[in-house]
Length: 149
Image (tube, rainbow, N blue to C red):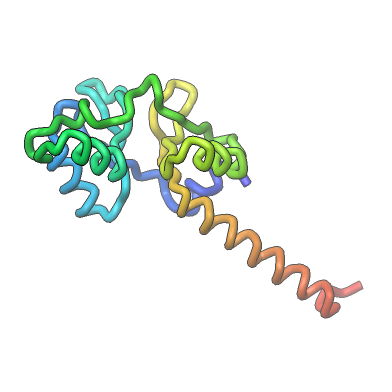
């Protein structure tokens, strides 16, 4: 299964925040949308990085900072360290990259590096379970001779 299949099923809406925002703004968006990460963009809509709940928690703990005084750009994973996917990437490879790098969200980008979607580990698991259910049902029907000869 490819990344594009997951995006077809879940949609390609991506939530973002400006690089100059503060962490409390990011938390407000994440809480309101019930999501775990945001793409960080500059004024020209170029990707500058990603900020996740985990980034915020770790940085707040380390610095004992108040989220109202903490800048998104000081907490986010910067573009240089960002792991991205392409639509044609296999979900097994994405799951491996997520596991190996201890991340839960991967932005999907096009040929111009514009974000076209976001895939979470939950999206991958949901898609794999749906695919397994289909395979089980198909094999069960085959075993029970529900297909004409």
